[in-house]
Image (cartoon, rainbow, N blue to C red; front, side):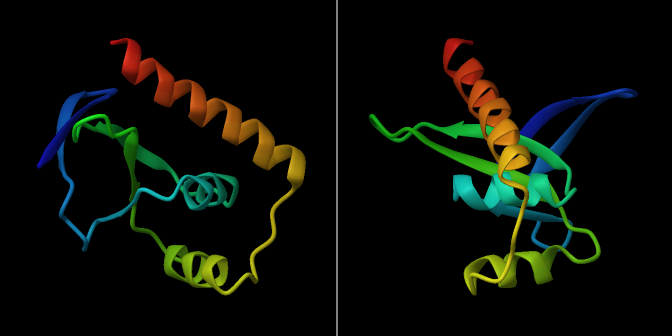
Length: 101
């Protein structure tokens, strides 16, 4: 599956299954945590499976992302609570805008 996203220079197709260049997750709190830690969200997409409300979040693989993910699952990562809440609200807004379009 590919996702079509806009860039400054035009459009680029991002393959969802390209694990060497992109990390994908449908875990919303992990996605917010990665954003708080400075990792760029490449794209997000709504997964249409019946009445499902699942989303997939794609991040470009960069230095340190695996450490943050491992620490997240080991309960050893910390982020500023206000920063987390702001990024959570912004990401939710982006998610709901996909439903409207």
